[in-house]
Amino acid sequence: MHRITVVGGGFAGLTAAITAAEAGAKVTVYEAHHTLGGRARTAEGPYKTNEGPHALYKGGPHWTWLKQRDLIGELAPLPPLEAARLRLRHKGTLRRTPPFAMLKLLRRTPEQAPVDKDFMTWATDIAGEEGAIAAAHYSAVALFHHDPGTLSAAFVQERLRRATKLPPEAHYPRGGWASVIDRMAARAWNLGVRVETLARVDTLPDDHGPVIVATSLDAARLLLKDSSLTWTSGRTALIDLAVRTRRGDAFAVSDLDAPGWIERFTAQDRSLAPAGEQLIQGQIPIAPRESRADGIARAEHLLDLAFAGWRDRVTYRREALANGRTGAVDLPGTSWRDRPRVDRGDGVYLAGDQVAAPGVLSEVSFNSALEAVSLALNIRSRAGLDLKQA
Ligand SMILES: Cc1cc2nc3c(=O)[nH]c(=O)nc-3n(C[C@H](O)[C@H](O)[C@H](O)COP(=O)(O)OP(=O)(O)OC[C@H]3O[C@@H](n4cnc5c(N)ncnc54)[C@H](O)[C@@H]3O)c2cc1C
Image (cartoon, rainbow, N blue to C red; front, side, top):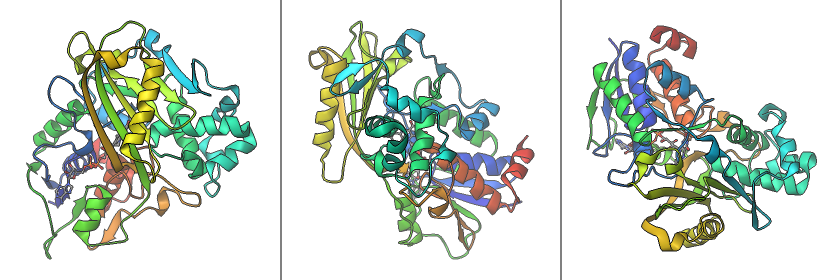
């Protein structure tokens, strides 16, 4: 029987552990924190916040995999009325529909967008400057970067398409992502996976067997003492607010004048805040020269536009900065294939959201975890692995 060690018990580590155990391997997971989940943890207590707004995209490969195993659980349904309360800030005021020029870009597929050109140059040719700027800023909801227009056109276009699909791809597990993590942990347990928490791994022993390093890329760089393990990512100011309920609050606001997104999560899932209160979470990507306070000031401006009287209604508030924690972004001339490869040699494999695997956000963690397991177990293809699981 194969023995596999997984370092990190986040979404990637748990995906790898379950997949390897399903294929018959004996798996041990070491997690530094006292609970599993990593960036997919949900806060305990009356306000069930994720680390920033967290959506599970239905079109992703992880969706089918989780669904087949009954791991998604109950989803918070999006009431049609709430969907209608999506607001877009454009030229300083709130509107209900995107600028017409932006719609031209939604007809293009990611394959039609070049890898080696920046999104702004490519999109301006199709939709004009105004449409291109609006589209770039909208796409920030799924890429967390302060200037999406400077990134690879193919990369941004894929996120734009996913984030604007109708019906929406974004779904929310009731109770936050922790509910999915709990079910994944239970499945791993039932498959005989050994999980050790509060177990930080600082070095790999010389005689290690196959190891899947499913940490952030920063942590992997330290653990493997490999300075080449870097890739670009975003920097985003996060704000979580609970406010007393007021009829007519927006469901979500997208900033088309600068990247930014604010969403009232209790619109779909009442369980996230006490009765009579609403949980609002916002993400404002910021430039290297900007501070968290700059991002929060922009968030407050959006809140002023869309949530009347919110300052007098606040019952809970938290701010944070997610620096390099929101997954990979690809610059012009690069794609996921150019990121640090999964196979590091000597029985070491990487899984995580900044490594060489396709997908949006956590889908990269998922895809790389499957790739790492198929390489570690010497199963020739992902398809082979999937067949084995069926
Ligand atoms: C603000 C924000 C919003 C996001 N929104 C979305 C979204 O809407 N949709 C989406 O799909 N994704 C979203 N993401 C991305 C998603 O959270 C991540 O892609 C995913 O959770 C990464 O999982 P992972 O297992 O690869 O890494 P992590 O979650 O970072 O897990 C790594 C684990 O390894 C552990 N670890 C680290 N070093 C060691 C060590 N030396 N020894 C043992 N254990 C170690 C850590 O404690 C951690 O538990 C968002 C992320 C952020 C920050």
